[in-house]
Image (cartoon, rainbow, N blue to C red):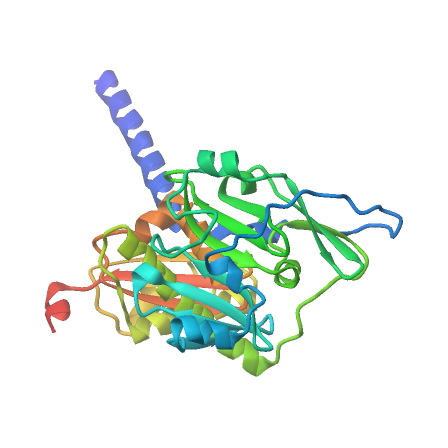
Length: 356
């Protein structure tokens, strides 16, 4: 009897451990690198550090950095969507084909950034699906990368994790951020950017000599517009990655989008990062408020990423969030952004509702 009693205690203990570890795994929020990145001013006496840069590619999407929108339209016609940004530029979104998804940042009629995760577009000298080992073999990779704007020098320092998942590479006149999929060690997305955009974003720890370049202060109207744009980008990027993994796209649901938007705003306004709102409760309770009928529901949340591109790649490199994004059971989603708080809600609808 005593032996049986001890076995039952051990089993109960293991069950409790499993419950809490699996629950916390499902509810784990994601806090991005910008939460701990520092901005360190240095003295004017610090010398400029010379640094090698790769020759700028002669072909591919990176050649459009610095070009006019007229040249972009000549190549790809008008975009499917124009998205406002709190950084003062506008995203031109080409999302008609998930296999050729592109985003171009435009400021004063000039292209300043381009992002894609397409396997078929030319992102010379790289290729989506390229291994981390191959990238290190062909690219100058240093933990510190310098950018110079007028007389100011900015130095970005990558952490050990950055060197494996968010590599910054320097070319003549432009930079490339290489987003590595930690699940398979392959290049999953790339952002080519000019110096000014890189400094405004501050994606890594940054020190500087000279003037601290900051983004313009956005109006409340621009913040509202960029929040809506960011939510649309979260949905785009999620579905692009689903298609690239052989999965069907998820349909956006207006009520789910409202739930996601409200939760992002609630987290920002009340300064917390959790799936449980102090005022509106758990995800299930928030869905009940909208009278949502569903079979299963989960939620990804994140903060301290400077834009949706970074947030989505952060989720992809987190096993729990990745499972939600690439699950075959969910049928609908809603995305929400408020400043730098990100929410995506996934539900599996009841079979009769899907058929309707």
